[in-house]
Amino acid sequence: MPFTLPKDWPARALTQLRAKLLDWFDANKRDLPWRATTDGKRDPYLVWVSEIMLQQTTVAAVVPKFNAFVARFPTLAALASATEQDVLKLWEGLGYYRRARHLHAAAIELMRTHGGTLPDDADVWESLPGVGRYVLGAVLSQAFDRQMPIVEANSLRVLSRLFGYRNDPRTGEGKAWVWQAAEAVLPAKRCGDFNQALMELGALVCAPTNPDCAKCPLANRCEAKRLNLQGEIPPKAARPEITNVREVGVVVRDGDRVLVCQRPATANRWQNMWEVPHAALAEGEDASAGAARVVKELTGFDAEPGAELLTIRHGVTRYAITLVCFEAELRGGTFAPGAYAAARWVRTSALAEFPTSSPQRKLMSALATPRQKRLF
Ligand code: SF4
Image 1: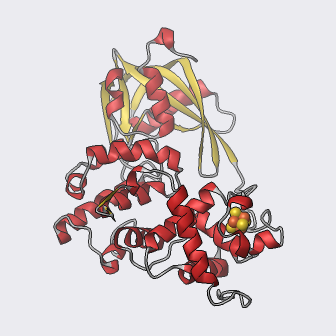
Image 2: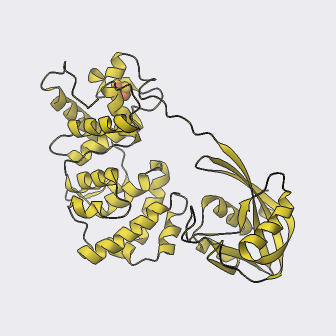
Image 3: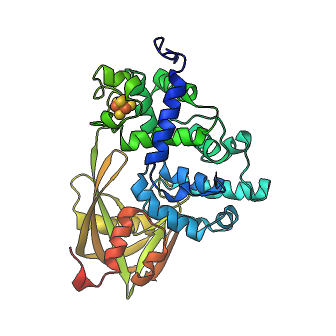
C-alpha cells in the first residue's frame, strides 16, 4: 500500500505541520556537539562522523566518543592520514567497528578523488563504503539542505503513529511506505532541520512506551493518538531468540609480559583488533582444561592454566556470552598464525594502546589494575 496523505487533511495541514515541528525543534533541540554551525552552516565532515557513530548507538554514548574522535581527527585529511589501528582505538566502546573501517576507507577515497572536500553530490556519496540510504539523506540534507528524506528508529515510530500505519514499517512493504511518508512530509527548505526534528521528537516526546502526547506539536493531526493506539503502533519487533554460550579466555604470561593476539581481517567481527585468546568451550568441557586447549589451538603456544581471574558477561547479537578468564604460564611452543594474524608479548601497562572489543577491554583493564585492588 503506497503512502498517501490522509484525505481529510485540509490543503494547509502539511504546511502547518512542518512549521509546528520546526518551531518545536528550534525551541527544544538538544545542544549536541555536531550541531555547531559556522555562519549558519553545518560542517559536512562533523555531520558525517556523527551520523555514522549514531547508527545503532545512543546519543549519550556517542557524545564523548565524538568529541574525542574529532579532537584527534579534526578534518577529513587528518582522518585519511591516520592508521586503521588509530581509528579503531578511537572507536573503542562504540561497537560495530565495520562503521569505523568504512569511515576511514571513505575518507581516504575522498582525499584521493576530491582533494579533501566533502561534495554536495549524491552520486559520490553513494559510491563510498558505509553510505546507505540513511547516511546519504542525513549528510546531504543536514550539510547541504538537500531535499532528501531519512528513516531511522525514531522517525519511523513518529511517522507510523502520525499517519496510523498499523503494519510493520521495518520490513518489505512497510519499509517502502515509511520512506515514502518521510519524503512526502519534507519541506522544500530546512530539510536537514526537519529530518532532525522528526528524530528528536521520537527521542524526546514520541517515546516507544508512554509517548508524551500532551507535549507533542503533531498531536492535533496524530492518528494513533486519536484512536488511542500509541501502544500498538508500530507493532513491537520480534525479539531474537537468545543463545547462551560459555567461553574461556586466557591471559598467558611469560615473566612480566602477557600475550595479545590480533584478529585476522577475515574474522566475522572485531577484524584487526587485539585480544587475549578466547574461544567457546565444548559441551560439558572443564573451563581450566579448555583454557590449555584454546591457547594451543589458537596460537600454537603451550600454557599451563593457573588461577581463575574473573568472569565477564556480555552480549553479541543474539548470543549471551559468559567469558571465564584464567591466567596461565607459558610453557613453550611458537606462534602459529591462522586463527590470529599476529601475536605480541607486552607489559600490562601497554595493553591500553591496543584497539580491542569492550569485553576484552574490561579484562585488560583488570590486568592493568594492581592485584590487591581488583574487585573480583
Ligand atoms: S501525538 Fe503522541 S503518538 Fe502522536 S506523534 Fe505525538 S507523541 Fe507520538
